Length: 78
Image 1 (cartoon, one colour):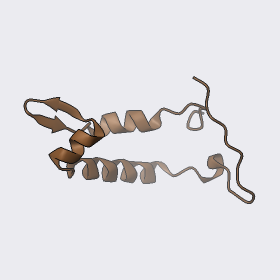
Image 2 (cartoon, rainbow, N blue to C red; image 1 turned 180 degrees about the vertical axis):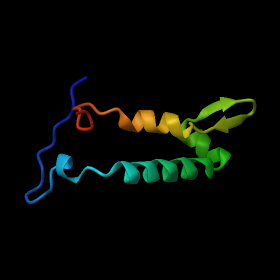
Image 3 (cartoon, rainbow, N blue to C red; image 1 turned 135 degrees about the vertical axis):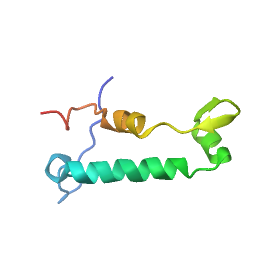
């Protein structure tokens, strides 16, 4: 799979220079997981959440982190 490269806007700060701190990433992950837990069953169905035991389940914080940390061009890899 080839990463999509978009020309930066004039005066824009490159992504690599404005990478969030580990504490900020953790806070974002917690906020996303809390938001997902607050979704109604209808909203979970629209997002395509897993249907199990008669309810739609949202992914765990670990699963959300794993998906968000996948990066095609390796910006987060050292």
